[in-house]
Length: 284
Image 1 (tube, rainbow, N blue to C red):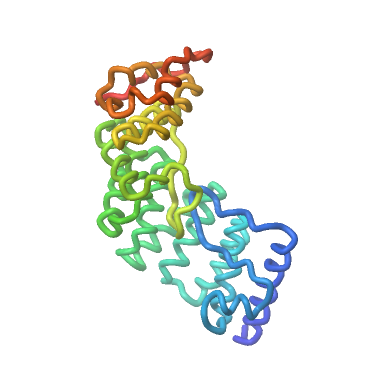
Image 2: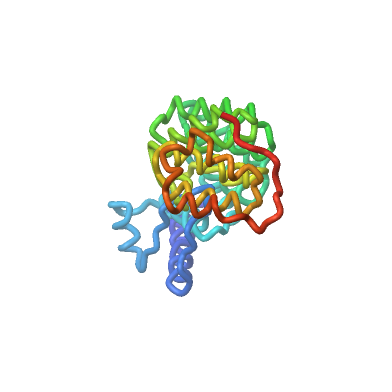
């Protein structure tokens, strides 16, 4: 296919997405991966977004990014695969394909693309982290811990990496290590557990097999930071999930900084009218 033909096809695809977005607002990217999508009204505005006249290659990747933002993951993967035909060792695009496949639940294929991305660029922390999330979803927690640690060495400033490491430690029942990881994530970004986006194709883990215990654990992390408001919020989530060890917060030294806060006390003094789903408690 000639460069001119490729440009025409790519531009047509981009303008189709832009036209659709004018009628239907772009859906923010999922909790796992985040990418700023271009919502332009004209080709000139699209060009201004990237700061220079767009090449056919840039138009094509932008179209893939817009499809990702709209959660049209199979279509996004198809677009990125077209780019890989000419750039088979492009670590960033390989990673994007992996994310797209992970979003539709194809973990094996996703993992293969993450490994290709890591091979193309051994210092690409996003792919290392994302491969860790694949291992996490497969319940290979030890492997995911190793990968998250490697990603942190490469990008120690990213709070998502510490959050993911905390999840893996938590599920591996390494509670003190999990608490340390969550505290580090909160130090770097106090909104790490609240926000929907983290800017870039870095998958952020959001699921755990024991949510009640997890919410209590996050509450404790906030308590040790002295954040009473978030402590109360996550204690309430733990209570509503039926966590049986809720009242241990009254005597747990980890909650000492906030235990007298009215919001925290309100949660702890309301006798839950819910059946307890868990007998687990957080260990120090």
